Structures are given as structure tokens and as C-alpha cells.
Image 1 (tube, rainbow, N blue to C red):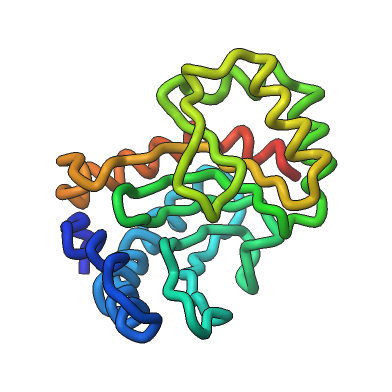
Image 2 (image 1 turned 90 degrees about the vertical axis):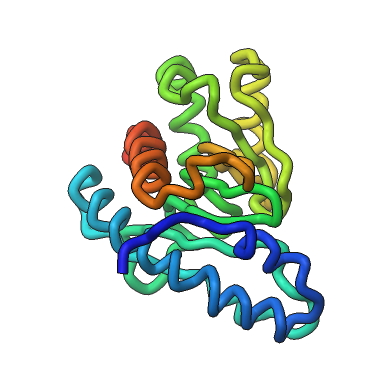
Length: 207
């Protein structure tokens, strides 16, 4: 099957009460779409990155009571897991889709990655388009608009990412749930592809 877009029903998943009911909807509504999206994007990213890239779909296996507030796919060079590595994500909260290049707190070498970014601050700052957003915590919905950040504020984010154990650095796009582009599978895939290719220099600079 080809990905044909997201529907309001997908976002309504996160208003369902209870772990079992919400997980059932995530598995039935959203994860099949993630598989379709991920198969396309992992092939594209393999070609662009020069490494074989593998699809991972969040299982939320550790949850026993509270239902997840979001869900996602991740694409990474490691077939066994993605959390410890630089990776790309596509996922949903109840009101938007996110497309990220992600460095989360599990990455054991995040200090050296952050320092490398700081050592090349001008280049890193210029790579990121001004209509992108940055998140410092993948568990939260809010994000900073790049166009509203000056270089000093951007540098401060990277310093925090380097020095605070639980700090994270995710950069990419938020697309509101009512944005027409989400209704078109082809248009969304093209947006996700171009977002990830734009951020590929950051991915490559993370090794």
C-alpha cells in the first residue's frame, strides 16, 4: 500500500481514554501509515546518507498505565535500535505532525556532538532554515521558532544540550493537523524527504 495521508481520526486517537484503547488505535490507525512512510523514507535516506537506514516504529512497551501522548517512527543506521544514535523521526501529537532530526538524551556521545556543533556554530546555524523549529525535549509539544532565535540564543541551546544530562536537541518542522498537505500522501512524503535532506549535514556532523 502507498501512504495516502493523515486523517482527523489519526489525531483523535490521542483523545481516547485508557492505555489499551489508545494503543489499539495507534496500532490500527497510525502504525500501518508509519510503515508505509518509513519504507519510502528509509530508502531515500539510505541513498542520501551513504549508509543503510532502518525503520523503527515506537512500541510504547514500557507503558503500563498512562496512554502515550504522541507516537512516532524513527529512521537510523542501526538495525537494533535508534535512541542512542542520531536519527530522523516522523510522528504525531493530537494537534500536529512533527518531522525531526533528533539527538535525544540516550545518545552516549551527545557531549562531543554538541561540542562539534559549537565549534562550527556559523555553519550549523546557517544549515537550519528559518521556518524550522527546535525542541529541547521530545516529550513536550512546544518548540522554538528558528526565525525568532538569534545566534546567541541558538548557541545557548547547544551549550545546554552539551552540559545538561537530560537535555535534547531536535530540529525540523511542525505541521498543524488541519494543514492540507497532510491530506496528500505524495505532498507529505516530499515535505518529509526535503526536510530530512536539508538536515542531513547535521546528521553527518554527528559522527
